[in-house]
Length: 252
Image (cartoon, rainbow, N blue to C red; front, side):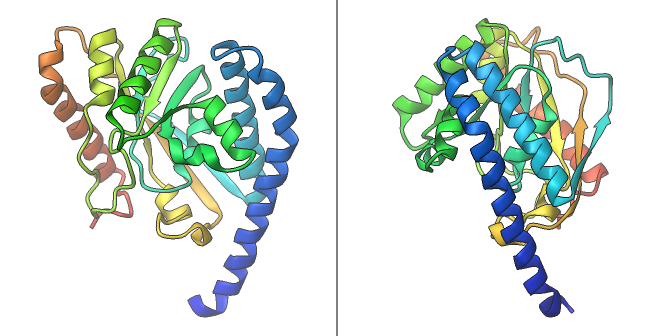
Protein backbone atom coordinates (compact mmCIF):
# COMPACT_ATOMS: atom_id res chain seq x y z
CA UNK A 1 0.00 0.00 0.00
CA UNK A 2 2.83 2.41 0.83
CA UNK A 3 4.39 1.87 -2.59
CA UNK A 4 1.07 2.63 -4.26
CA UNK A 5 0.70 5.86 -2.28
CA UNK A 6 4.30 6.99 -2.82
CA UNK A 7 3.68 8.79 -6.15
CA UNK A 8 0.87 10.77 -4.50
CA UNK A 9 3.20 11.81 -1.69
CA UNK A 10 5.80 12.98 -4.21
CA UNK A 11 3.14 15.03 -5.97
CA UNK A 12 2.08 16.48 -2.62
CA UNK A 13 5.69 17.38 -1.78
CA UNK A 14 6.22 19.04 -5.15
CA UNK A 15 2.98 20.99 -4.66
CA UNK A 16 4.12 22.01 -1.15
CA UNK A 17 7.48 23.17 -2.51
CA UNK A 18 5.87 25.25 -5.25
CA UNK A 19 3.51 26.90 -2.74
CA UNK A 20 6.47 27.54 -0.40
CA UNK A 21 8.41 29.29 -3.17
CA UNK A 22 5.38 31.25 -4.40
CA UNK A 23 4.69 32.71 -0.94
CA UNK A 24 8.39 33.42 -0.48
CA UNK A 25 8.46 35.44 -3.70
CA UNK A 26 5.36 37.37 -2.62
CA UNK A 27 6.84 38.47 0.71
CA UNK A 28 10.39 39.02 -0.57
CA UNK A 29 9.92 42.69 -1.65
CA UNK A 30 8.53 43.50 1.80
CA UNK A 31 11.49 41.75 3.46
CA UNK A 32 13.92 43.80 1.37
CA UNK A 33 12.13 47.01 2.36
CA UNK A 34 12.10 46.04 6.06
CA UNK A 35 15.82 45.18 5.97
CA UNK A 36 16.61 48.90 5.61
CA UNK A 37 14.97 49.59 8.99
CA UNK A 38 17.77 47.97 10.97
CA UNK A 39 18.37 44.78 12.94
CA UNK A 40 15.74 45.48 15.62
CA UNK A 41 12.78 47.22 14.00
CA UNK A 42 13.36 45.67 10.59
CA UNK A 43 14.06 42.26 12.11
CA UNK A 44 10.77 42.34 14.04
CA UNK A 45 8.87 43.10 10.83
CA UNK A 46 10.69 40.36 8.92
CA UNK A 47 9.89 37.84 11.66
CA UNK A 48 6.20 38.76 11.35
CA UNK A 49 6.41 38.34 7.58
CA UNK A 50 7.92 34.90 8.11
CA UNK A 51 5.06 34.04 10.47
CA UNK A 52 2.58 35.08 7.76
CA UNK A 53 4.53 32.96 5.26
CA UNK A 54 4.27 29.92 7.54
CA UNK A 55 0.58 30.55 8.27
CA UNK A 56 -0.29 30.65 4.58
CA UNK A 57 1.93 27.71 3.67
CA UNK A 58 0.50 25.45 6.36
CA UNK A 59 -3.03 26.45 5.34
CA UNK A 60 -2.45 25.50 1.71
CA UNK A 61 -0.64 22.23 2.43
CA UNK A 62 -3.16 21.08 5.06
CA UNK A 63 -0.94 21.14 8.13
CA UNK A 64 -2.48 22.59 11.26
CA UNK A 65 -0.92 23.54 14.57
CA UNK A 66 -2.32 22.82 18.00
CA UNK A 67 -0.95 24.87 20.89
CA UNK A 68 -0.85 23.17 24.29
CA UNK A 69 -0.17 25.45 27.26
CA UNK A 70 1.07 23.63 30.35
CA UNK A 71 0.80 27.03 32.06
CA UNK A 72 -0.42 30.41 30.77
CA UNK A 73 2.16 32.01 28.50
CA UNK A 74 3.05 35.69 28.93
CA UNK A 75 3.95 37.07 25.50
CA UNK A 76 5.11 40.33 27.06
CA UNK A 77 7.83 38.61 29.07
CA UNK A 78 11.32 38.03 27.77
CA UNK A 79 12.72 34.48 27.57
CA UNK A 80 15.49 32.28 26.31
CA UNK A 81 13.31 29.78 24.45
CA UNK A 82 14.70 26.27 23.91
CA UNK A 83 13.14 23.58 21.71
CA UNK A 84 13.85 20.03 20.61
CA UNK A 85 15.11 19.60 17.04
CA UNK A 86 13.90 16.58 15.07
CA UNK A 87 12.90 17.77 11.57
CA UNK A 88 13.47 20.27 8.76
CA UNK A 89 9.92 21.42 9.48
CA UNK A 90 10.94 22.76 12.90
CA UNK A 91 11.97 26.06 11.30
CA UNK A 92 8.50 26.63 9.87
CA UNK A 93 6.79 25.66 13.13
CA UNK A 94 9.17 27.96 15.01
CA UNK A 95 7.79 31.15 13.44
CA UNK A 96 4.25 29.95 14.13
CA UNK A 97 5.05 29.11 17.76
CA UNK A 98 6.33 32.51 18.85
CA UNK A 99 3.92 35.39 18.41
CA UNK A 100 6.22 37.92 20.04
CA UNK A 101 9.55 39.50 19.06
CA UNK A 102 12.06 36.62 18.89
CA UNK A 103 15.39 35.93 17.21
CA UNK A 104 16.35 32.31 16.64
CA UNK A 105 19.85 30.92 16.25
CA UNK A 106 20.29 29.02 12.97
CA UNK A 107 22.96 27.43 10.80
CA UNK A 108 24.85 29.87 8.60
CA UNK A 109 24.93 27.45 5.63
CA UNK A 110 21.29 28.26 4.81
CA UNK A 111 22.22 31.90 4.13
CA UNK A 112 23.73 30.93 0.77
CA UNK A 113 20.38 29.78 -0.71
CA UNK A 114 19.19 32.40 -3.25
CA UNK A 115 16.33 34.65 -2.03
CA UNK A 116 15.53 32.33 0.89
CA UNK A 117 19.01 32.99 2.31
CA UNK A 118 18.43 36.75 2.33
CA UNK A 119 15.19 36.33 4.31
CA UNK A 120 16.81 33.76 6.58
CA UNK A 121 19.81 35.83 7.61
CA UNK A 122 17.63 38.90 8.25
CA UNK A 123 15.12 36.99 10.39
CA UNK A 124 17.52 35.06 12.62
CA UNK A 125 21.05 35.08 14.03
CA UNK A 126 23.31 32.77 12.03
CA UNK A 127 26.09 30.65 13.50
CA UNK A 128 28.92 28.57 12.07
CA UNK A 129 29.40 25.94 14.78
CA UNK A 130 32.76 24.73 13.45
CA UNK A 131 34.32 28.18 13.82
CA UNK A 132 34.99 29.25 17.42
CA UNK A 133 35.26 32.95 16.50
CA UNK A 134 31.93 32.86 14.64
CA UNK A 135 30.27 31.05 17.55
CA UNK A 136 31.49 33.71 19.96
CA UNK A 137 30.23 36.47 17.64
CA UNK A 138 26.78 34.85 17.47
CA UNK A 139 26.63 34.69 21.27
CA UNK A 140 27.49 38.40 21.50
CA UNK A 141 24.72 39.24 19.02
CA UNK A 142 22.16 37.17 20.93
CA UNK A 143 23.10 38.91 24.18
CA UNK A 144 22.79 42.33 22.52
CA UNK A 145 19.31 41.34 21.28
CA UNK A 146 18.25 40.43 24.82
CA UNK A 147 19.45 43.86 25.95
CA UNK A 148 17.02 45.34 23.42
CA UNK A 149 14.12 43.55 25.14
CA UNK A 150 13.73 40.80 22.54
CA UNK A 151 13.57 37.09 23.35
CA UNK A 152 15.88 34.57 21.72
CA UNK A 153 15.29 30.96 20.66
CA UNK A 154 17.91 28.19 20.47
CA UNK A 155 17.87 24.51 19.57
CA UNK A 156 20.24 23.36 22.36
CA UNK A 157 20.82 19.99 20.65
CA UNK A 158 22.50 21.92 17.84
CA UNK A 159 21.34 19.58 15.08
CA UNK A 160 18.81 16.84 14.42
CA UNK A 161 18.33 14.27 17.15
CA UNK A 162 18.94 10.95 15.38
CA UNK A 163 19.51 8.91 18.54
CA UNK A 164 16.06 7.38 19.04
CA UNK A 165 16.05 8.99 22.48
CA UNK A 166 13.78 11.92 23.46
CA UNK A 167 16.72 14.34 23.20
CA UNK A 168 20.38 14.36 22.33
CA UNK A 169 23.03 16.05 24.45
CA UNK A 170 22.70 19.83 24.89
CA UNK A 171 25.29 22.48 24.10
CA UNK A 172 26.05 25.11 26.75
CA UNK A 173 25.33 28.26 24.72
CA UNK A 174 21.67 28.91 25.53
CA UNK A 175 22.21 28.29 29.23
CA UNK A 176 25.30 30.46 29.44
CA UNK A 177 23.37 33.33 27.84
CA UNK A 178 20.41 32.82 30.20
CA UNK A 179 22.71 32.96 33.22
CA UNK A 180 24.79 35.91 32.06
CA UNK A 181 21.70 37.91 31.08
CA UNK A 182 19.55 36.63 33.99
CA UNK A 183 16.75 35.71 31.59
CA UNK A 184 14.40 32.78 32.37
CA UNK A 185 14.43 29.70 30.16
CA UNK A 186 11.18 28.64 28.50
CA UNK A 187 11.08 25.15 26.93
CA UNK A 188 8.75 24.79 23.93
CA UNK A 189 8.32 21.30 22.44
CA UNK A 190 7.63 20.38 18.81
CA UNK A 191 5.86 17.01 19.00
CA UNK A 192 4.81 16.08 15.47
CA UNK A 193 7.32 17.59 13.05
CA UNK A 194 9.11 14.22 12.92
CA UNK A 195 5.90 12.65 11.59
CA UNK A 196 5.19 15.48 9.16
CA UNK A 197 8.72 15.49 7.67
CA UNK A 198 11.41 12.95 8.56
CA UNK A 199 14.91 14.43 8.87
CA UNK A 200 16.24 11.97 6.28
CA UNK A 201 14.22 13.35 3.37
CA UNK A 202 12.52 16.57 2.28
CA UNK A 203 10.18 14.37 0.25
CA UNK A 204 8.71 12.75 3.35
CA UNK A 205 6.31 15.65 4.01
CA UNK A 206 2.74 14.71 4.94
CA UNK A 207 -0.34 16.74 5.96
CA UNK A 208 -1.68 16.60 9.50
CA UNK A 209 -1.24 18.15 12.93
CA UNK A 210 1.77 19.78 14.56
CA UNK A 211 1.43 20.12 18.32
CA UNK A 212 3.40 22.79 20.16
CA UNK A 213 3.76 22.43 23.93
CA UNK A 214 4.59 25.52 26.01
CA UNK A 215 6.15 24.35 29.26
CA UNK A 216 6.56 26.29 32.49
CA UNK A 217 9.50 28.69 32.58
CA UNK A 218 12.64 27.74 34.48
CA UNK A 219 14.02 30.70 36.47
CA UNK A 220 17.76 31.28 36.64
CA UNK A 221 17.84 33.35 39.83
CA UNK A 222 20.28 31.86 42.30
CA UNK A 223 22.41 30.26 39.58
CA UNK A 224 25.82 31.52 38.52
CA UNK A 225 27.85 30.78 35.40
CA UNK A 226 29.55 27.98 37.33
CA UNK A 227 26.16 26.24 37.50
CA UNK A 228 25.72 25.77 33.73
CA UNK A 229 25.92 21.98 33.93
CA UNK A 230 23.33 21.86 36.71
CA UNK A 231 20.92 24.22 34.92
CA UNK A 232 21.38 22.45 31.60
CA UNK A 233 20.58 19.09 33.20
CA UNK A 234 17.49 20.52 34.89
CA UNK A 235 16.11 21.79 31.58
CA UNK A 236 17.08 18.56 29.80
CA UNK A 237 15.30 16.42 32.39
CA UNK A 238 12.14 18.56 32.27
CA UNK A 239 11.96 18.45 28.46
CA UNK A 240 12.78 14.75 28.30
CA UNK A 241 10.02 13.89 30.80
CA UNK A 242 7.43 15.84 28.78
CA UNK A 243 8.49 14.29 25.46
CA UNK A 244 8.07 10.84 27.02
CA UNK A 245 4.71 11.87 28.51
CA UNK A 246 3.46 13.05 25.10
CA UNK A 247 4.92 9.92 23.44
CA UNK A 248 7.17 11.46 20.82
CA UNK A 249 7.00 9.03 17.90
CA UNK A 250 10.79 9.00 17.32
CA UNK A 251 11.44 7.61 20.81
CA UNK A 252 12.39 3.94 20.74
